[in-house]
Amino acid sequence: MADTHSVIGTKNKKGQTFTDTWEMLNEAPRTPSFFTGSEVIKEALRRASCDVMIAYPITPQSEAAALIGELFAEGYIGDYFRGESEFAVMSQCAGAAFGGARVFTTTAGPGTMRAMENFPMWAGARLPIQMIVTCRGINSPLSIQPDTLEIAYLLNTGMLVWHAETAQDFFDWILKGYMVSEEPDVHLPLALCCDGFFVTHTKDVVNLTPADMCLPPYDPYRSPVPCMDMECPPVRMMRDPFVMKSNYISYATHASWQQEVWAAVERSRKHTIRWINGLIETENIDAEVLIVSSGTAVSQGREAIRLLEDEGISCGLVKIKSLRPWPGEEIREATKNAKHIIVPEFNVTGWLAKEIKASIPNSDRVNAGPHVCGGMTMPPEIIVSEIKTLLGMRTMSLAGRGS
Amino acid sequence: MGIYLPNPGEAHINGVIVPEEKAYEEAAKQFLMAKVPTLFPGPLVLWDWNEKAAKKATAIRHLYNTLKECVQPGQTPMLIPMPDYRPKYPKINPEVEINPNHPNLTIWHNKIDCCMFIGVHCHQANLSLKIIRGGTSCYTIAMCAQAGHEDAMLSFRDASVEKIMKLAEWVRKLKGTVQPRLTSAKSGASN
Image 1 (spheres, rainbow over the protein chains, first blue to last red):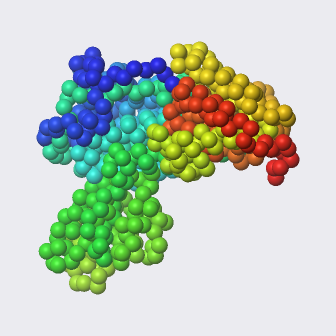
Image 2 (tube, each protein chain N blue to C red; image 1 turned 180 degrees about the horizontal axis):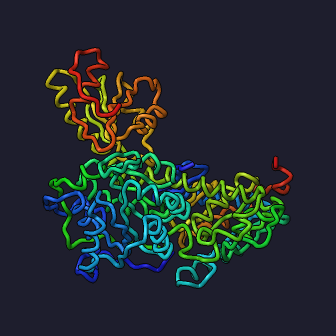
Image 3 (cartoon, rainbow over the protein chains, first blue to last red; image 1 turned 90 degrees about the horizontal axis):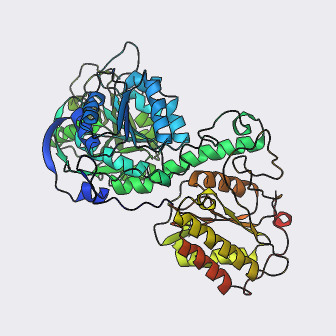
């Protein structure tokens, strides 16, 4: 609706050229660079035309918040400040997004849990905030080691939830995430998760787009709700019959509102598939044994497959990239011939296995595990051992690392 | 819930993606069949906040005038502006209002049997379209400036002055070829 003219080809105050995102990510030359995951987050943000970043940098799980502070000092971020707690940060993010800004933040573990009330509020208010979740343990006694339990809590907030395997995923998906989140028929927050420490603190070769190219700015006039209208929901939430009355029309409005949020999650499917090239990736899915997982458990699965090949055992792989929208149909299709579906996870409850079981026929094919938790690593040998046990083969006994 | 919305150049009718041309014809037919075909222009076209909005408002007035010229006796086209989404305070009357976010969207005891949303923010439009669809027998059309509306029975996308004028042309083209329903929507509805 807005009388906007294209800014593509023009320069921002740092001399970066606003570039068509598809061209920038798929056609522009890439430079291999050796970075930690936290540094990759900074490099993605350098190119994201981000208006506001709000930080609560207590967690040692990721240095990203502090590194983005450096970006602000260099002039790449419109505004940057520290909240008084994770709850405050997420509320401030909402305020900035209500005002029409492209917003970024990062959190982990107990911080995610402390701020939880805000996430369904973000989704209900249709705010396309991007939040990096560098997953760590959430239970007491506290751990700064990776554990993906917090993702389970995010799945029903109405946010989009993606789970990156590598720092390269992370770099690309931060930029692509804004493209999906900001579509007017989606316009929802994105929780872009990774397994903290493994991805954030280790160095990897990441192919970066040119630093003199950046995303086009966010256009708030494409928002499905009026920008910062203090008289109307979702900004105005109390003192109105809409919220406070107990009558059918009030319930109907609330119900429609929730349905619309989840419909928007579903509508994101089309855009997500285009931008991250499908909700899942598959290898050798004709094999009788499949490893189906997300995050760095996928990397460990790849190693396990190599070890199994040495012993003449064929095993396929399904990497789940998006958890919301959930790739139920894709997983059904990919696993239709599998006799054994192994779901390794970095958490104690096995939430991913439960999601998969709920999506496929003959769910007794799903083996929930191996699980590691509390920051334990997952050696590929324990995945191999689990598979060989399922196949009735002799396998060495391993020390317990969880369930 | 959560259908694939049309790509540019397409529309949807009852969730099925169709070429835009087919949607113009169907929308015009629905208008000409209806006893009370109604346009609901929203704040994005009611306020003169940019040149495009003003031109769209003029085009909507043209569509309304075209409807008035093309309907038969007994049909009553209406143009009901929806200037904002403020909840009505202190109370709403669900007998006459379908959505507390839309005090101006008066469904008139389900006497409006065909309506078109235009210039309504997508989220608010989808809420109202869901409630209308769930509680009335009104045929809903959306002329959306963005990606289209899954909750309308028929939806265009990328609304422009040209598209509104083209819909008016289709109404004129089909004048006299469509048999109107001259009973009220309510008498034929189950609710």
